[in-house]
Length: 578
Image (cartoon, rainbow, N blue to C red; front, side, top):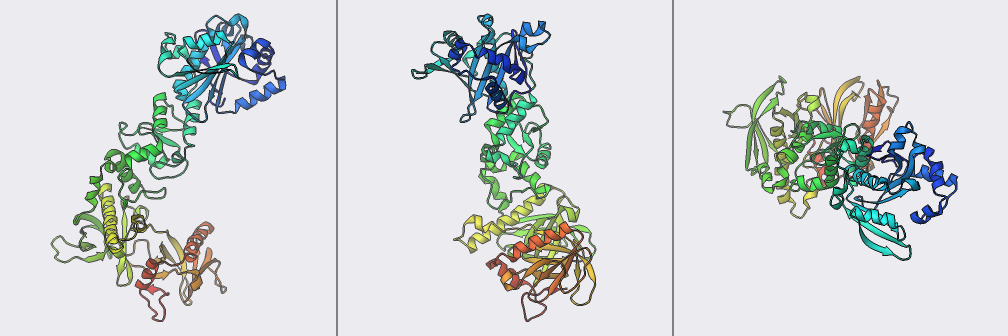
C-alpha cells in the first residue's frame, strides 16, 4: 500500500480510499460471513490478525488495496467512511513481471450488489494501474462457483486462460489498453478520478533506480542520481542534468525524480529505456581512446561527452572517429608564457608520423619552439588553477626535467578534440610497439589525471625554514613548485616501493616542528618534512602516498625513475632540484 497510501480516487458511483486501521473492524465483521469466505477463498481470522494484516499491507510496495465507498452515502453522511464502506478492491503486483498484476474485488454489503459498484471499481483500478503503474496485463483468479464475479470480468473483456479443479478457481487475463477501454464511462479523466500523483511517480521511479545500471549517472557514473531525462530515458546526477539543460528540450528534457510532476507517458519512457538500453544506442561506437568522464572530472569533459552522445550523435557512426586520427592536426591554442605569464596565441601541430606535438612562437617561424615526444607527454584538464574553464596542462620530459605548458581554447569542443587526438595518436603508436597487448591495457594511461595537487609547507634539506610550495602528485612523481602555474618544478621526488625504504607517516620525526599538521615522507636518501593547513588535507596526502608506496613498480614506473635527472650521481632515487 506504499503505492496508494495518499491516494483517493473518485468515480461516478464510488470513492476508493486506502485501507486504514479504522476500516479494520468493519472489514473483520464482513469476513465472518460464510458466504464471503467461500466466494473469496479466505480463512476466518481474529480481529488482532486482521489488524496485523492491515499493518503489513500498509508497508508492502507490491500491494495496492482500496476500500470501496458508496459515493452517495459518503457525501450525505458528511464523509463518514465507515458508514459508507461496501467492499474492497486490490491490485497485487507481480514481482517477477513488473508489467502484470492480479486484481480482485469484493462487494461485501449485500444491498450494494447489482448496482454497478463492482464494475466501476474494477474499471477505476484498471485505469489507475495503466496510467500510474504502467501495467499492461491484469489477471483475476475467481472461484468456480462465483458466477457473478465471473460474469463481471468476462463482460469487461477478461478471457479464461486456465482452470484448476484442485483449487476450484478459474484464471482470467486481459491485456491493455485493448478490449476493456470501451467500457470506461464517458467522463473526463478529472471527473473520473482525482488522485495525488507525486508519491506514485516517485515510488515508480525509485523502483526503476533499483536496476543496477540505473543506480549511477548515465554520463559520469556518479552514484545515486536524483535527476532524469524524460525524453532520453536516462538517470542523471545533478551536474550532468545541468549540462542536459543546455541542450534543447527536443533532445533532452530534465526533471527531478523527487520534486517534479511526471506524466504517465514520461514514466513509460523511463521504464522502456533506462541507462542500459540508452548506452547501447548512444555509446555503440565509442573509440577505445576516448576518456569517458567520471564524477570528479571537470565540466568541459562532461559537457563535450554529453554533446557528443546526444546532440552530435558521434557514437552512432563508426566513421566519425576518424577525425581524431589524422596525419597532421594543426591549430591555434592560447599558451601561457613562461616568463611574462600572459596567454598568447601559438600554432600547435600534432604529427601522426613523427609521434610529436610541436608549437611555434610565430606563424612565420621555420623551426618549432619545442618538439615534444608523445611518449613522455601527459595532458590534464586543470580549469581551477588556470582559472580557464577549458584550461589544459601539458607535461613532458625536457632533458630529464618535467616541463609544464598551460593552454586553452575558447571553444570547448576544440580543446577536447586536441586532448582526444593526443590520446588517439598515443594509442596508435602503442599498438605498433606492443602488438600482442590488448587495447584496453594500452589505453590505461594514455593520459593520467594528477592524483592530488595543493599547497603544502616543506622544510629545506638543512636548517632552512618551512616554505609554502605547490605540490603535484603525478603517478610516482611528486613535484613541488613555487606556484601552481610554474613552467618547471623546483624539485621532483620519485616515490618508490616500500621494500626499498619508502614510507610516509603522520608527524615530523627527529623532533622537527612543523606549522600546521606535519607528516614525513621517507626516501632512501633523505626525509621530507611536510605540513598541511588542515588535518583532513594531511590525511588525504598520506592516504594517496601510501597507496603508491605499497604498490610494486611497473616497467613504466622504472622508465619514469630512470628519466628523472639525478643531482647526486650515487643514486637514482633522489630529487632533481632547480
